Image (cartoon, rainbow, N blue to C red; front, side):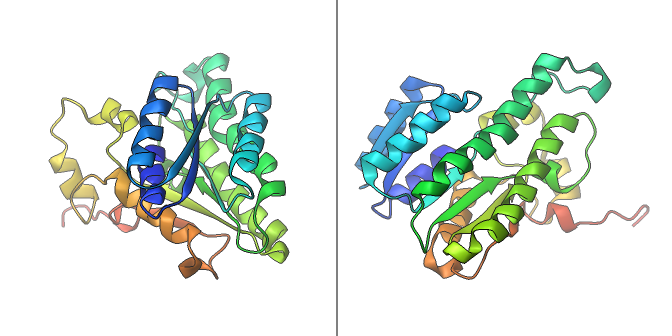
Length: 240
């Protein structure tokens, strides 16, 4: 989803700073951003490391000037889908440090460099952050934290003209979701649970991010925008 967002912003002619743990993927993304008309800057970064996050954010600000929009979307799941009591502490720490602490650190170091007024921060939640779901308790907690962070920062930064919102994707076709869906016929699941009866696309998340970052959303802050084909609103009634 981060890759799709980078390309969506590039198509508007934006300067796009990107980070990630895979240098080769970063180089490929940078080349595609440039091909689409944007300007790219990549720095290999692990958001579990505060010093690396600070280096990336401050480097992006120095390279391009003041930051207009910051999207904190790095996220992982535990390597095992298990009840909380069966997760080891190393896996718990990795998810917390990437999904929640990484988002907090990204926002922390970006705030001094955001354009005033008009800057924005976008965090990323999930349906698991909006609703309960077994076997992903730590992931769910981190995603709920991303929503709470957006609300808190919207209040904290509103007087400076900075908006903060959150995107909550449903099932979107990504490398992460392929872990659950690959090799399975999922259409019966989409039909039963998703009003639009299909999996989502990364570009549909990117379009929502692009709107939140734009002046068209200039009076929207502290909100979580759910992009899930309607899954969160569907109520199943037994026997009907």
